[in-house]
Length: 112
Picture 1 (cartoon, rainbow, N blue to C red):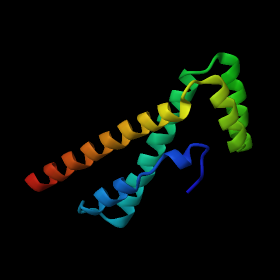
Picture 2: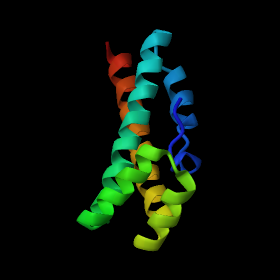
Picture 3: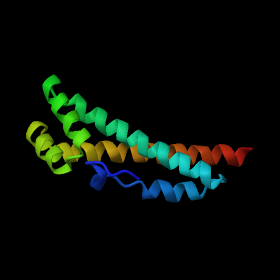
Picture 4: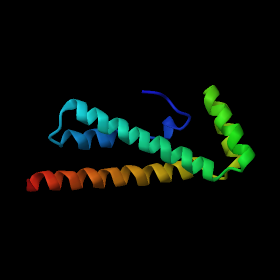
């Protein structure tokens, strides 16, 4: 799995555990984990970009292509107040929603 500048803030271990309760093939579970990772990646990048000016977005994206994680954090902390807390809150919200979706899926499967 690829490491991103925000990887230290994100854990989907609880999603892995919840998916074990579903009657799915390993390949399907793996696809769902990948989808969860992609969703978080999209939401985090969207959150960061929504907080930056047009010019700063270009700088941020350039740093991302260089995989300069320390540089990205220096830049973001300079440009966006409490960015780590904002990313953590958004991540918690997304993971919470994914948990709800899994629970809903379990209920629907039990009715069948």
